[in-house]
Length: 457
Image: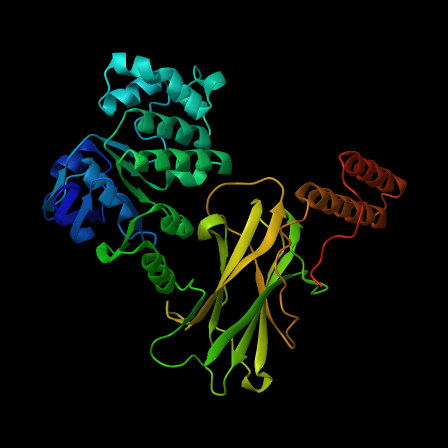
């Protein structure tokens, strides 16, 4: 590849992990080279050449070295081994808030960040209105950025990065905190850059995006480059590596335990339900086909959001499997759905106890729809596990034609009735009934047509 924009040859990056951290200037001055520290190689022997106009996705498990490689290519970190060569102006969006001063206003930070990326004040003056318009932060541009939300940080940072007219754009997973509307706006800008022949390298956990946007994909694992090629092949290989492929069986021998189905149900009635409010109880039932002689196994369920981004994970301890039952159902019950809203899928795996080896793994697309307030990022949640005697019926697909406003109103109405019933049982009496009537009438006034809560038949 002769006409390249980025070239990395035998790149290695080492960090020292000190077991004793200096707590004073004296200790730091007296600390010798022989002090206790371990070497950690975040990158080893990375050889990568990216041609002009290519859009390359950089993917891999957490801790594989993706962000470190971007920082090396951007010139933020110096490699310990090897060399890099970059041709053209680089704009990078690598960390939330990188290049911003929290005490300065959004306006002042635009000029600061643009100067770091190589723009003169006159050039920034010319682009300023377009930057603010793209970021949609006009009313807040003169506020200190320390009061900005994470999404506002990303919007301003991305707006500056794409308006400095870069030849090469490096983007880390910071876009994961943006909302869907702004993410679509960013993808449209990336498509515009592609038409202009600019080079783009970005890190993402959104594997579906890789096949849609990239002409090539690179996988890192434990600091080493293990794949460089077709985006679809890359995503399939990474899903197999992480145990979230559509169907995956261990290579050593046919699995003695196979995943048949996974359903989302009411923990009490076992009725299949698709729609929930934040805080509702929920259960995930996993049907296993068990061969005679099967050893105990662990069951892992990862609830994933758009583009297979993991939201929360549940994993059992080793479960003794009953081969006489042939089909065995493991249920993982969540007392309260965490503060996440949207449509979610399930990545289910059966693991050898105490290892990362998957006996079987399957992905079940779009099984849960949640309404209510939300938090960002990976969240923790409590859950319990039990083994059921009989499996439930097969899980039907999610109804995409359903009216979300109606569903949400019905869920809120049902929650209000349960709350009133509980209050009445505890002695609240007519007051609770009056309040539920008010909430029901409010939901109806908002346009909801009363009907039964949608349940899978």
